[in-house]
Length: 124
Image 1 (cartoon, rainbow, N blue to C red):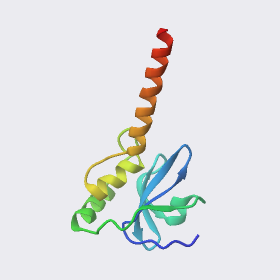
Image 2: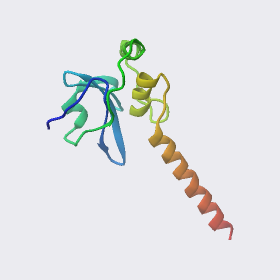
Image 3: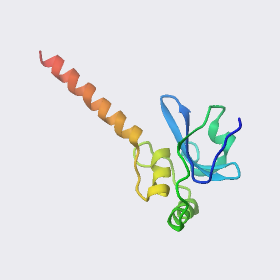
């Protein structure tokens, strides 16, 4: 597939039942975090896994801080953790300096709503 990408674009692709997120580094390279390889760099095709890739945040402004955070993350391969180091955590640590995972938060809220509804209905 042909993409018009800029360095530090935040990318996503479908990965049922969620979206997989990565950070475009230029020259066809993407930083991302997977259960198989932890935090690593792969080719854009390796990131895409045959799926369509979309830009969810265009051109995060390159800065010394972003470059330093990226280099620091690459010095030691960090394992994947659904709860504390998924692909969203890894990318947001580099782009903002703080780990966050909106998908994980939404799944947690959804589970809490379902459990509350179940307990409410069961009480009747």
